[in-house]
Image (cartoon, rainbow, N blue to C red; front, side):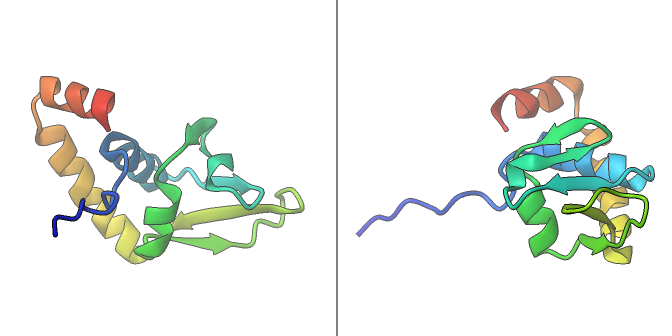
Length: 106
């Protein structure tokens, strides 16, 4: 019997690459509430990438003493920094039209 594949590992490749790149540049991922839809990096919403970043241990929570109560803060792990460099290099090597198509389709 034919079965459809599960959801892709990376739901939105452009968002994933951008999230890693921003975090590699020193920005933190902020998660307000229990939903992954409440995530932002430097004011930009992260809709799909939080669970993948967390599942593969590319990000880890940290205690932000200057932060707000009930808000979680995440930074890249050492493996996440290394992976971010590779992903961004690969992403930037793709032709502009291909990157645009990925942005439009996920």
